[in-house]
Length: 408
Ligand SMILES: Nc1ncnc2c1ncn2[C@@H]1O[C@H](COP(=O)(O)OP(=O)(O)OP(=O)(O)O)[C@@H](O)[C@H]1O
Ligand SMILES: [Mg+2]
Image (cartoon, helix red, strand yellow):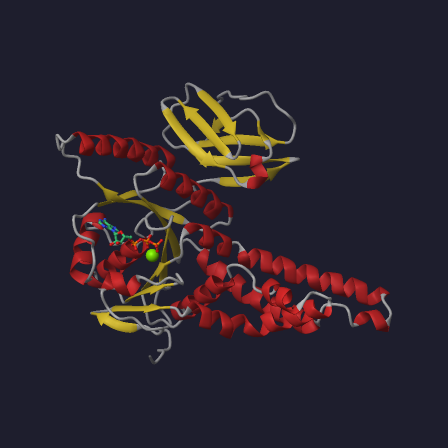
């Protein structure tokens, strides 16, 4: 497909990424969002980065590895993830493997070690970023791989830059001290160069993916405890790496009619408890809902109907929420966890930490948070609510638990 030169004044392409546990409906929601966006007049591209592509099945269109027009203003494709990774990082992977072999690692082990986890998805996203820079689309909706993979990949740009920097520093320092014979054993300059290039490209990608005016992450959940638990983890890690979340979408919501059938009634009751958990967990985010439909929502017209139920008159390409939902910063020897809690009357506040889970009770309101590993190893101190934010200090000192108190 020919690439157009970007119009100077055109607003940046919006990137909307659907994340969530396997099978919750990410592909369906990405497709429905794209169908709606195109119907509202936006030039829209929907693209899948999941190696196990199912976007074509959901749209009921045969998709290739390049954008193809499948409806008015609607384009779709499935990134050939492995090809893209080979094209982007194949050279570096080879160099890294050669280096490891010279270091005495066996051939097979070296090839395995040189494959960095998450690299394929980073390559796919780099390609999508390139699409977003052509000016050809107003909006790109990304159907990502299940949460675990995506979170790992989202931390890549930082770790790559870190490794490239360290490797270079280490080499530079050693070069000054070692004799010519030992120099051969030092990391190849090519490896460092390729790694730095890769890091630069992922850094640019990260700049776009963390810019809230450009990118929005939407977490898809179903009304199930295990799914919500994983969504909390996703929220924590997206916040930790500054990836802006602008909505939570609960999919497969049963209609709230009393069926009179004990089995359905029990299911409804379980679902209502789960929905209450979604509401308290993601209190500050817009909550969208999609009903469980009798038929699988497949094909453009079923997706259009579904998107109408989810978004109503809303334009899904708009930024639905601004501002982080959690924030962690260093404070002395420990950390301060801040969680926005607007409109909460603080009469009673208590904390309970169990492993990496933190339960915060504020009045009648309970919030469960999954802590990143750094905080999970520490103990919470006295929490307070200040300027609409719940602030919880964490330190290594074994503090009395749960040390809770409220101050305004
Ligand atoms: N609201 C809904 N009502 C009925 N069926 C649905 C609904 N949403 C999704 N489905 C069906 O559930 C299945 C899983 O949906 P989908 O493929 O979109 O999930 P996913 O999160 O992308 O899965 P994966 O993690 O495997 O990529 C599909 O068969 C889809 O048609
Ligand atoms: Mg999918």
